Image (spheres, rainbow, N blue to C red):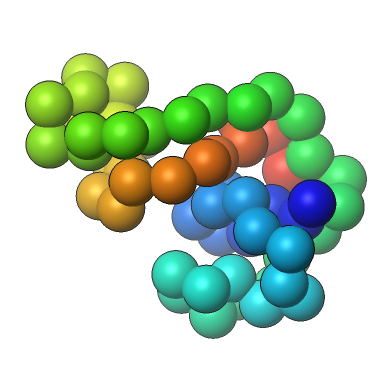
Length: 58
C-alpha cells in the first residue's frame, strides 16, 4: 500500500487516483472516512472523498 504525498489517500498505485500526485510507501496511521460531509475529522483535514487515508507520509 502507498499513500499520496499531498492528499494522503492510500492506494496501490504509483500515482494518487484522486489528485494524480506521487505516492510513497513510507507512511503511518490509518484513517477511514466513510461520510466526509458528516465527519468532523474529515472537515478538519479537508477530506472530501470517502476512502482510506494516512496520518503521516514522507
